[in-house]
Structures are given as C-alpha cells and as structure tokens.
Amino acid sequence: MAGPREKPIIGIDLGTTNACVAHVRSRIPKVVPTDRGNLILPTVVALSDRGDVLVGGVAKDQLVTNPKNTIYGAKRLIGRKWNSKVVQELRNYYSYDIVEGPGGEAAVMLGGKVHTLPEISAMVLAHVKKIAEAFLQKRIDEAIISVPAYYSDAQRLAVRHAGALAGFDVKRIVNEPTAAALAYGFSRGLDQKVLVYDLGGGTFDVSVLQLSGNVFEVLATGGDTFLGGVDFDNRIIDYVLEDFWRQHKIDLAQSPIAMQRVKKGAEAAKIDLSLMPNVAIDLPYIEEKKGRPLDVRLQLSRQQLNDLTQDLVDRTFALCDQVLAERNIRPDEIDEIILVGGQSRMPLVQQKIQEHFGRSARKGVHPDECVALGAALLGDSLDSIDSVTLVDVLSMPIGIATPTNHFRRILDKNQTIPSTKSFRLPPPREPGQPIEIDIYQGESDLIVDNEFLGSIRLPAAATGRRIDFKLDEECLLKVSFDDPVKGMTEIGLATKDTPEGLRKALAEEAKKRDAAIGAAAGGEPEKRGGLFGWLKRS
Ligand code: AMP
View 1 (cartoon, rainbow, N blue to C red):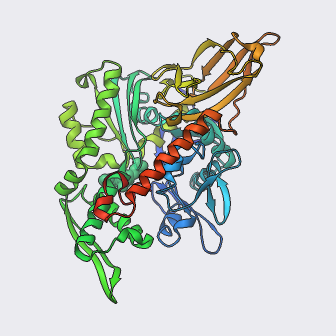
View 2 (spheres, rainbow, N blue to C red):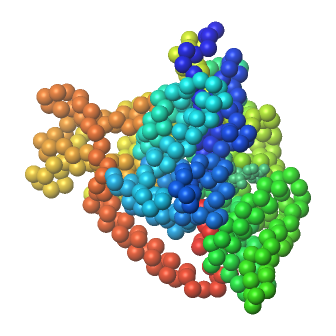
View 3 (cartoon, protein in one colour):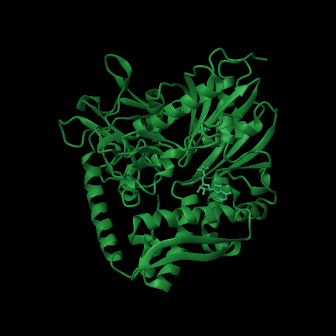
C-alpha cells in the first residue's frame, strides 16, 4: 500500500455554477470548506464598484446590483471561438459583455477591460488554491481538474491553461463522470456497470462505466450541453412573469433588477420544492404603477413544478436510452446509478430513475461533492503502485471540413482513448496552393454547428502523405504528418484565423438568427414564450 504523496495535491470540480475542492488524508477524501464555511464555492468573479476583484459568494451577492461586472457561467464559454454559434447565442442571454479575445476566442469585459476566459477561471482557481492552502496549512502546487466528458480539445486546453495561470501544476484533466465513479468505486474491488446521471446547473451528462477492480472504463457517454437546472428555473420564471402580466399588464422582463430578483426567487422556490410540497414566491415591491408598489406573490406546488418541467426530465431519460443503445446495454444491466449535480436532487428525477431502471439511485454518493472527491482520489493515487487505470472514450467526433463545408469524421464518438487514426493528405483546394485542413469537433454533419479546433497548412508536395490524428489519455489532440525528410513530425494547430468556409457559413447563420429575433420581438409577452423564453439562459 502506498504512503502519503510527497507533494500534496487537490482535486477540483470547476462547475458551471459552483466549484468544489477536495483532498485526501490517510486515503480518505474530504471536501475543503470555503472561507465562508461552505462546501461549495460559486464560480462567479466580479469587480466591485471600488475596483476590487471578488470571487465566490461575495461576487454572486452583487450580481443583482452590478450585472455588467459579474461574470458567471464561464464554463460554457471557455475554450470556444468568439464567432462560434454557441457563443453568439449566449451573448443574448448573459448580462455581461462577451467580446472577441486576442486569439479570436470568446472573452469577457470586466471593469472596462478584456479578459480571456482562462484568466477568469484562473481567478476562481487561484482563490481555490488560497482556500485550500489556508485550510491544509501547506503550499499546494498540484491539482487534478475535472471537466465535462463532452469538452472539446480546445476547452480542455483552456482549462489546463487556467490552472497554470492560477499557479497550479495540473497533473491531469479528468472527465467528471469518471471522477464521480471513482468516488463511488475506488479501491472497492467492484465488478459493476455504473451509470452516472449528472444534471447540473447548465448541462446534462450521462456516462456508463465498467468498473473492474481499479480499472474504470467508460463504455459510452452522451448528454446535452444546454439542459440543466437553469432550464428548470426558466420555466418558473416564465410562470411568474406570465402571472404578473395577467394581473398588471407589466412585462417584468424589461427591468434587469426585477428579473434578477425573479430569477433568485424562482431558483429558491425550485430548491425548496425538493423538500416541501408547496412554497410561496414572495417578492415585495418589484415594480410600481402610478406610484403604487406592486408585489409578486404566488403559490407553487411540487406538482405544478413537475408539470412545468416534465418534458425536461423526460429528455434526460431519452438521452440515457440513447447512450445505452449505442453500446447495446439494457437498462436492467446497470448495477448502480450515481446521481451528480444539484438538479438531480429533484424528487421527480429520483422517481423517474426508479421507474426507468427499476432501482433507486445509489445513496451515500453526494451529488455536489463526488466529482471533487474522485478527482482528489485520482490525484492521490498518481505515482502509486496501486493507482487506478482510466480507460476513457471520445465523447464527440473529431474530423475535418470538406470543400462543401460538411464534416468528415476522422475519430468517431465512443472511440477508446488514447488512439490514433491515420489518413492520406488530400490535394490542395487550388492547384499550387498549400494544403489546408480545418479541424472540427462535434456531432453535426455541418461544420458550422461544430467547434472549430484549428487549421494546419502543409506544402502542396505533401499530397498523399500520411497524417495522424492522435488522442492522448486526456483526450487532447496531437496531429503529425509524415515529413519526407524528418519522418513523423508533430504540427501545431493554428487557431487564430477563422477558415473561409466557416466564415461564410457563420454569416449565413447570423442572418437567419437576426431574422428570427426580429420576428420574435415586439409581440406580447405571452407570445414571446417558447423558443425565446424570458431569460433563456444565464
Ligand atoms: P451544480 O452545477 O451541480 O452545482 O448544480 C446546480 C444546479 O442544481 C442549480 O440549477 C441549482 O438550482 C440546482 N439545485 C441545487 N440544489 C437543488 C435541490 N435541492 N433541488 C433541485 N435543484 C437543486
């Protein structure tokens, strides 16, 4: 059995809404409490009116009064190109300004200055480092950071970069479901198929793992990057706004401060309904009419919440079925179900788990903490003789653009990693020009819906030579080609310039989006529900 690690290491779950940090002492993983004594730290960074950088609970507290200088949800933006479809859509829903960064990536404005997303996440991570060092009373330089299984190569690199900016030597990036499974099965000598159902603040992830002793093999993974707790909140927000409109013919969505209060009230009601059958949403003096104060005052029952959100829960189970079907696994073959993410505490989710899988979820695995605990266990076991073996899969295909802006898959979904795929270099698009290959990651057959990872350029003479796409164990892509003189040589990906084909496709998308927004604006609030819900995402 291995002794304690020479250098202390922590596991960090850097979530969309909250971060959680853990360490291992005497082989037992434990969460490190924050400076406020909580077990989770809001992943919010803000600049106060006095110019101080605030991180965590204090930053979240000033969201209502200082929305332009309060950055939340960085996890959705990090590692994405500014002109990607996702970022352009998020710009409509976030209260702070999202701008183009120096390398063409999404960046944010804070205090009138452009900050890259790795810089923002580094502020959270540096705070985490400080908290952990104060609590453990020693310097901590090493960390394992978890990321969603669906994170692209660029997103993983950006998180690594954030860790380095915060002063960490990031020993490994681990997928969140794998970390959750580690928290459950580490050193228990299990032989089981485990399903990790992770419904967090902004995303839904499902993975099936085979645990065989200390080998953790991901069999399949999937989910929806736009399905999470915030969608549940939005259903309640819509409900509150419609009720207010019916009573007073006032559209509360026009007032950012009122909206922040409604949002806070909606989330609190949702969380309380996990414990209680009925709650009251009470927001005094939210508006005024002819000098008279108006309040939001309404009752909401658990049954009403279930009715408002049933389709969201159903979607998570459709995704579970899809992931199981990809590997021909029947629901009754699953030995354990682990719930991760705050939204999985909703009683309707737990009831559906029972109905769907014929068993209840595993008790004793804490949905907010297990990812950080698993990451800490992995860190502690690195370099030790009884360390774990992680066998992961690629969650989203990686491929290249065709001349018609379609996506040709090179590395397919659920491909075990590390792995390498080779192909022959196509000729240049124009005779005599260099060969240009634009690399993307995503599920769509069209490049415009996928994430642009980077381009490579090679001389026309390289036509027909071998090129390798290699994924390392952290799911990071390395590209090399068979140079006639030097043999297999690694090529760096150029990420700054948007490829011509993508630029055109994005311009067409932007035109379509503007037309849709134009058509949706101006109608009565009831008519603006649905696709253009009140505060679709934040
Ligand atoms: P996470 O990203 O895992 O921190 O999940 C945060 C999400 O879980 C937020 O949308 C919270 O509103 C939601 N959440 C936290 N606790 C509960 C609860 N007891 N019941 C329902 N949702 C919750």
